[in-house]
Length: 171
Image 1 (cartoon, rainbow, N blue to C red):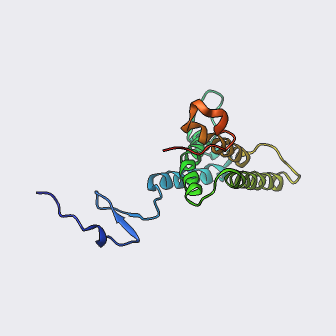
Image 2: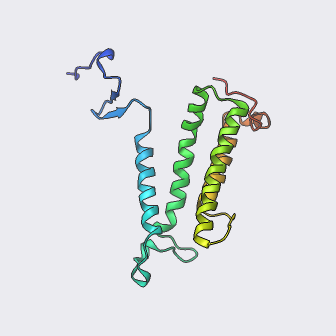
């Protein structure tokens, strides 16, 4: 016999019941992505703050060329999280009515802010102005490139129009 279901109106507005009985936020956030991002940030803090010298475990040190340790996976995993979140961010901008220049401005502002934050952190640790490509700067540039190229994925044959942010995706 099938399990009884609640009428649509009886589900609280703050939560939606899933088929497995878990409650997910009505905000539409992807819980798995949030959990993976949290794990990645935890690992990032762990591998960047280990100061045990020669007693540091091998998995918390970068491998020599050609090798792979847990430490070497943190940055690619974080880029994966940033890339997986891009469609959600761009969809939220579309729902908010941001298109064309306004969308481009917001994407550029986010990338510039992240780049400048990375430059500030690098400059503070180097005790001089540093505008190179640190981790935060690379994340900013990768996210910027992904956000600029995302409209092209929907219309690969019209990439020359999509990359200028003038076309709108058609359903």
